[in-house]
Length: 156
Image 1 (spheres, rainbow, N blue to C red):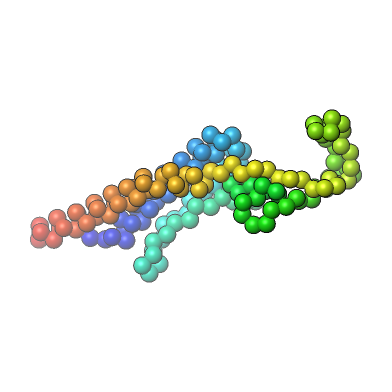
Image 2: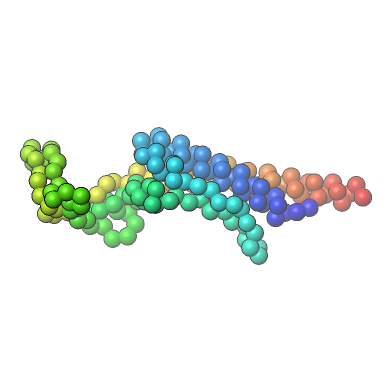
């Protein structure tokens, strides 16, 4: 009976399940496909009495991922909330239609800063919703390993 192997198999299956459901949530929330594309699953490993696996969202590929999970600017739910500066980078001025002001904005930077975006979480809701299934998947693998071990004990 090898419990570690069954934990690795179960954790890998459970993590794959989580990633698929999280990507579904990204699509349901109308979030950028880049978040799903930047999501990867590591290899389960055992270190002492701990079995772990990493699910990673590469923020270089999807820099907006954190802002959608926790909000940004004034809407930030993690870290300090506040306006953040927006300045022209590749041109001398920012130029856009300002709906509230009913006019064009033209300037090197926003004078008061950008208020950010409200959170549209996709990670935590997936963890909460899928935890029973994740536990079931891992438990199923461990139970199978134990049953195989018991069968082997009595067959010799």
